[in-house]
Length: 495
Image (cartoon, rainbow, N blue to C red):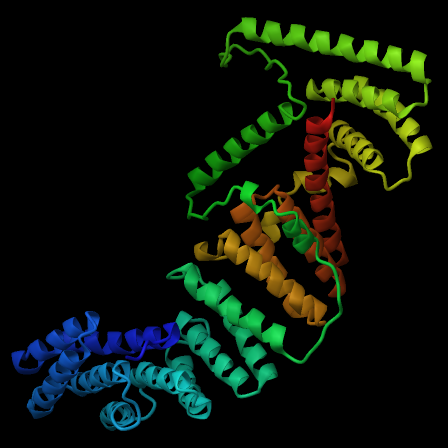
């Protein structure tokens, strides 16, 4: 028994659908219709011989019925061809049936009728599945031209035909032509407001990546910040989300909740929560005794670090790294309470000690500088270094369909963009990166490390195409996200 590939099964389904709709408009003729319905039922249960017999009966009856339309006749031809093909019968039965189905429609409606696009594509899928790529190429080229006239170049059907023709061209040894078609098809797919499912996009990206992997064009061996982040194997901790359409009201609510969550997260950075500002409009979500207890704990922690600093200075000296560690711990406690003026001089002293003992690439030096920069950003929110935090970088990105707002799609888009960049296809790389960061922000979070890594890669592509100002904005945003992550990590690693 023949097992159909996904592409041919989809093509057969698409090809029969418009004809089935057409026959619904015709008077019901039980002589052929009942046999046709029986054939469909048997085909679903894979009773192929019974399906062939039923479709053969339907074809005989529909041809003898003067009230049958050309669409009815073509439908029966294609259904019988599909049953034969699944039963592993090809040239002797399947090819003539497809040709007759196409001939019936050509005679009735002309050689450029939109009704021909689907059966031509279905026949091409059979040819492609059999490895006859030359015939598949001719059939798909003709079908694509018809779709372009009837549906336009921005339709989902056009994108599907273009993708399939590109795949056939690649198998015929025409990678450059195939790549152009893949890219054009991807542009159309990503411009759709709605996609039936993410599977269409996943299959397209898989074929596109496969082409660039196997093509002869060899690019530079470069590093991707996004790929480095993936190598850390932290995908399990990423909160995967699926994009959903939202009203203006929902967008506003989401924005406020996100800001509240961000503020709450910042307040927990160093494992302590500062008391909320008292107002007459807001009731605390916990008893005041809890806040009093927390304040007492914080005082004890301050005393602990002060004693540790004094002890280390007396026993080890003022420039010992242990002193810097304790200074950083006390600074972290002040930062958790948003006491930036108290934290800053402590971190500056710690940094001076670290710089005497370690190289500039040492993690504790980088971490301390990041915390100092965090204070600078908080105290000077309008500074150039902090402007990217205020601006919403996602507003400059293209809208992507909901089906593309998945982490799996984001991963493939990032890989595809990086491959284009490595091969010197900067314009394509820049466009694909814009989709990649939009998908990553929606699926992994706008302030996630994956988003930051993608922004770093995107900024490099922007610079390569001369968009220096946009690249700077993306870099600043990525740096801000990274600083925030570093500060959180630093808090968790402090004693």
